[in-house]
Amino acid sequence: MSLSEFDSRDRAILEFAKLRWKHLGAKDTAILVLFGLTPIAYSQVLMTAIDKPGAEEYDAEFVHRLRRLRDARRADRPSRAVGFEIA
Image (cartoon, rainbow, N blue to C red; front, top):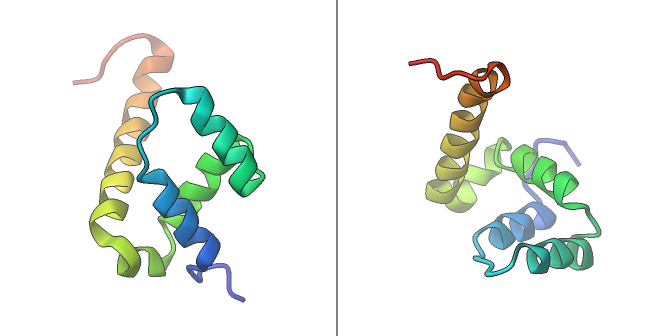
């Protein structure tokens, strides 16, 4: 299996990411029970999954939304570290 393949686990993680949670602790517990991952590891797996070629074929709109959110956080990160905003 190639690392770039979008497999059933990737699909399950992408579907899970669509769910809304009232309490953060409930989501963290579900991540551990369903995937055997910590929330940080889950986030890393999700970010890797959305970059795989099959992700867009599976759910292009949601994958593009997640990529935009990730890219916006990355762009904002340096300014938060220094303590000011870059316009």
